[in-house]
Image 1 (cartoon, rainbow, N blue to C red):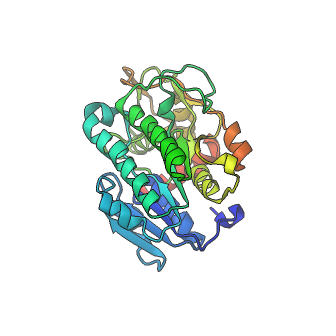
Image 2: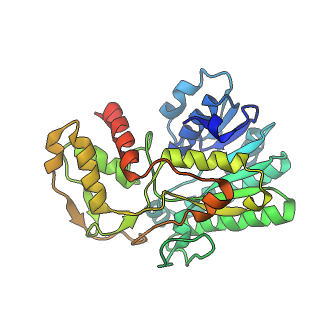
Length: 332
């Protein structure tokens, strides 16, 4: 992705927490490609060394192996940094249900450490990964930033608490913050393995192995699937925008369309069928709905368009085409 079109100053030094993870490593790559000095902080709890292995040769890349639960690590990472893109977190609703204590420690205590470090080190703006899970039991569609429901999982509670802390730090200490409520991000480098793998890479790998994708429910649940390059665009826009009305708030990061799981599988089989025609004939297995899942998710992206100039380039079809090609090259 060409960040020069977004007018990001290559002199800005940027810290990406969780920089070895799916979203974080894509951000590191894009920022280095623009010429920016990048600091990556990760403890490899969910991030992968192979995601950033090729970046160590870059002169402007600094890696710090550390944990956001450790304030000293956060302070060290924020040294001489202009902007923070805070991606570090323990994702996954099921993981938070199984182990709420660790999710709370990382996502709330770790988040607070990063806010304190950013305040103390004079960071110009703190941009952080929020979550669409914050909308909770709100049934209204599309989801609008100012109207949320009650959280449905420990994970959702942690991400909503992040927004509350960011708001307090903005008002109390003058730290500029922007929260980005990600909606079902997918794309290159998203891990297909493990108990908490996201639905798209999990389905892709099963189909590539000629195994049936397993759907929780009847396949009617829908999501606003968001390609990784749209997320990169929003993170950079959150840095470069100098409109004071655009900061100290939260934005949906999505494409603005929803796709149900049955439609998703059809599109995956179509794209994978280009490489292996037998995949088109694989049947789907349906199981019980998953605890804590929201039935439908669709974002309004009007606020991001109006205040940040957001213009997502990838919908579900062209995004899936890119993602499937990457998985075919890397996991076949």
